[in-house]
Amino acid sequence: MKNFIALISIICFLAFFSCDKVENPIPVSYDDGLNWDLFPNGDSADYAWPTWLANTNTYRNVLIEDFTGHLCTNCPAAAVIASSLETNNPGKVFVASIHASPDGSFQEIQPPEFIADFTTDAGNNYTTDMPGFLGNPMGTINRLDDGFSGVWYFDSDWALATSNALAAPLQINLQLQHNHFASTNAIFVHTETEFTTDLDGIYNVVLYLIRDTVIASQKLNTGATEEEYHHHSVLTDNINGTWGTQMVNGTIAAGEKFYNNFSYQIPSTDSTFSIENLSLITYVCNRETYEILQVIKTKL
Image 1 (cartoon, rainbow, N blue to C red):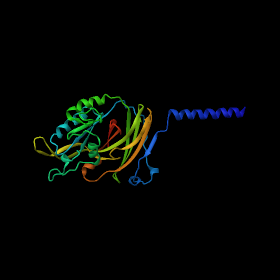
Image 2: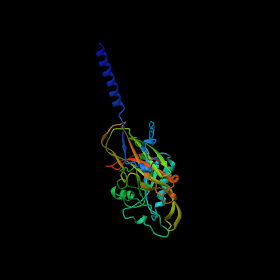
Image 3: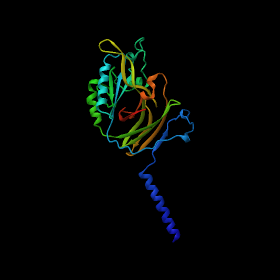
Image 4: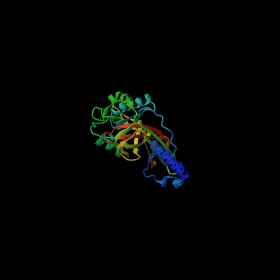
C-alpha cells in the first residue's frame, strides 16, 4: 500500500509540472553579443538584469519613416506633416528622419554650409532594398504595402495612411529596458517581444539610435538656406544592423515571448550624442513583406 501511495504521488507531481510547462512555456532568450568590456564591473554575474511586468498595451503604434535630405527643398514641409502626426498622436506615432536616397544627391556634403553627414548605411539600404522609392521626400507608414509605390508614400498621403495603420489590430507587443553606464558611455538594451496572435513568417526586431534634435543647415523651397534648422528625430545608427535580429522563421503561437539583449557604445563625436539627446526606436517587422507590426520609442 505504501508503494502504491508513493507511486500515485510521483505521478501527480509529474502531471502538475507537465501541465505548468504547457501553460507557461519558458520564453526564448538570446544573448545577442553583449560586450561585457562595456560593463564597468566587468563581471556579468554582477549585472542587474531587468524584471518584466505584464504588458497591458492594447493598441497598435505607427512608425513614420521620413526619407529626407538637407538639400531637398520640399523636405521641410514633409517634416512638418510627420511631426504634426506625431504630436497629435502622443505615444502612438513616432517619426524617424532618415537622410537617404539611392544616389545620395540630396544628402551630399557641400561646405561651407552643408557639412553634417546624416546618412547611414541602413538608411541607404532601405531605399534600394524596398522596391519603389522615387525620391525625397517619400516615407513609409509601418511599411504597409498600400503606398503610391509599394511601401512608399508621398507626404500628402501620410495622414490617411497613419490613421488606417492606427486602426489595425494589435499582433505584437514590445517592451524595452536599458542601463546606461557613463564611465564607458555604453548602453545595455533588453527587449521583450510578445506575440498576441498566431502568425507565420520571418520576424525581426530592429533598434534605431535616434538623435532627438540636431541643429544644422537645411535648404528651403525659397532657395534660401536655414543655418539653424532643427532636424527632428534623426536616424543615427542601427544598433543591431540594417534588418535587425531574427526571432522567428516559421509559425509562432499567440502568447509566445522572446527576449533579446544588446550592448552599444555611444559615439562621442559631438554634443548631439549626449545621452539627454538620444532615444531608441524599436520595432518588429516581417522580413518578407517589410511590414512593421509594432513600434515603441524609449528616451535614454
